[in-house]
Amino acid sequence: MNDINSINDHVRNVCKIGQKSACCRYLVISGQGFECMKGSDMKAYLDSRVAMETMVARGDNCPGKETKDLNSLIIQP
Image (cartoon, rainbow, N blue to C red):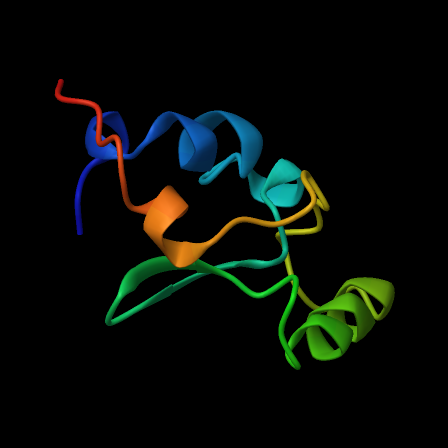
C-alpha cells in the first residue's frame, strides 16, 4: 500500500485515514483502491458496529464520495 504522503487530500484530510476514532467508518480499501461505503448496503452494518463500539474508525466525515474521487489527485511526496 502507498504511504500516507501519496494518498489524496480528501482521504487524508476529510476521511482522516490513520487517525483512529476520527477516521471515517465508511472508508474501506478494495481491489479498486479506496471506496466509500456510505451509500451502500454496508452502511447499516458499519453504523451498528460503531454503536456497539466494536470498531476503531467512528467518523462520519462527509456526504460520501465516488471511488474515482478517492483515488484521484494523488499527492506526490
